[in-house]
Length: 309
Image (cartoon, rainbow, N blue to C red; front, side, top):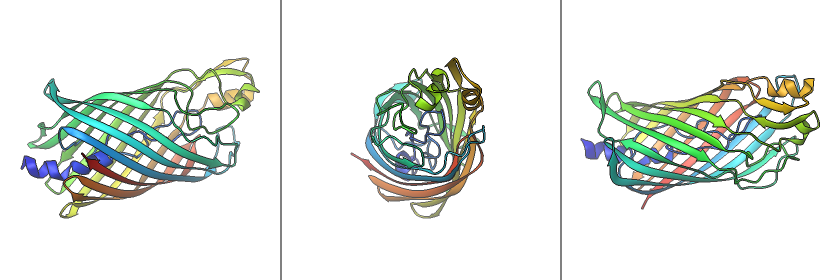
């Protein structure tokens, strides 16, 4: 039984562990829906490479102060390396995760023509043998640190990089309710440090630095194996900013109207996932956003493939 599940969850890496440059107004790039199907389940010790190709397009970007920032879009290539060690701690296998995003941004505002996003790395603990109500329950905790290495220039909005550090712990799990039906969730908490060189539009309105508010967000999916090694799912994400952005300086009313409001979004859509071989898998999904506050509202489509060395 364990061997069967190990094969089934090989492709979990194609949706697991990664972050995504899904930048909105002041929040840093976040993992919004990039990881979902079989996210909590990793197939075992080894080295993996995953490539994600994601396209995002929004034709509505309303700021809370009523300003319409027009269209925005990006194409992302996320490069991810994961190693799961044989060594254990607290009954879980140790692992390390490194991600380097390349992104092209376009929009009605003056977007940065650079392509390198912020580097993210973090250790994790992966449990393979736990059960919930007698059914296989795979779970993982990870602590990610995002370094301000991406390209950033205050003349532009948006930017590939965020120009500040991000600390983001998360908890992910996959529960096989039946051998065919499973559900996967990942819950994130995001803490950002201060950006000392904010967007020039904010600086012209008195802002000298800005710290994005703390945020909670999660990805979810409900998955069913329709054919051997082929799963379909309903998947999506939710973001809720918990605290307002903190703007320092001689902030006028316009800047305060940007710093004060909190971001929120919910998304849902179909996904498919295919284990092509014991060492290779791929998947495709698209998700539509709704119930949006102070963010772009659009569609996000992702193709990914994972190879185990």
